[in-house]
Image (cartoon, rainbow, N blue to C red; front, side):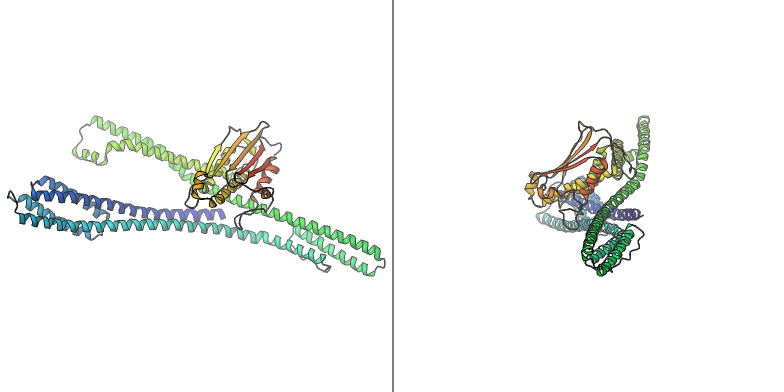
Length: 557
């Protein structure tokens, strides 16, 4: 139920943000179109002014000046569509009317030549209107640029808002986890703490101390055994006070003390084992929740993608039939009416016939890519494969890499980490697929953490000369073992730390970054559940290699 709530929040967030982004992009595109139209008008105006001055000095060609006047007005009309509320566009039109009037006066003037004073007056008028129009066009362009910058700023704010919402969704997940911990595990831990306190009281000589634990499980049985032990110790102490045979009493007391110490040691081992089991259950629950979330997202994406993919095939067929029909019309009616010919010219039918199949093909490629991503997500989750079965190891590795793609690609805060795969031709492997994917996730995530830490200590030039990379090798050995090697070129692991890597709760990461359970659980999965081998080889300054070996077939399921 929790995973459905989180999925619904994420989908709702994506829909709202996508709608706002599309609106901002449309406004930004309008601003760009307005800038293009204003620049086009500015260039046309320059040509018109040059020709107008030529008319003053030389010939009076009406057709040429009318062409530039028409082009200028077309550009101005486009600008008015993109910026309908701009007041200076109307003023530009009025200034341009004065220029047209000057041109008409010059062309209709029957004199062969103008006097110097007349030419000068025309030049002054032309320059004056030209400066006014250029000044107002510049203002319009600046406002269009400001609008574009504003839209870009809104888009940046939307990206930041989306990051904040994502963080809040993660917070919801953590809160749900905390509630589960409080309701389920905290009472057990509290009971074990009471047992530990009781043991310390008895060890200190307080034989009257009793436990009152009612949980209905093994912890309650331990509490009853503890109380029984305390009663017996009390009886022994009373006997000791009454008995004259001090030597025998001392020996019996010593024996009871030894037994008490052994019981305390055994109780401490029960506590340590329970803590380890608790931590593994928490980690397993986290991976199960992640798998459910991934599978839910994959399922929700898969339905609309299948709908789109199925309809693209029909669209392709319909489009082909329509294009064939258009071809037959062209062959049987080679001389269409003027209205049809104008429409053909407007829509550029030749380009449409050539480009439409390409567009549909691009849609098919995109749909197929989404289906591949959904398949990889479902492969990683493996919710329907809790039992041991034969699977393709490479699919599990690739699905894990897809989940971690966001940490591998280049970002402003860290460079790209390259993945280099050397896959052999492997047969299907009998294993617990979901658990094996968890091992791949833990080891590759640790490799990414190591490379990120290493890059933070290096300069940009060092990173460019020696970029971070992870190599993955797979092969079938001569003794029918599947071997997977995951190698990074990070800073390596010191020998003092390497011997503790697979110990529970051991971690070199800062508080809050790691639990120290990833490699411990991975070792449990590979060695105990798959009868395999998990080893680490590392050299400081050169990198780290994790080697996994599991049998091709398990002896027992």
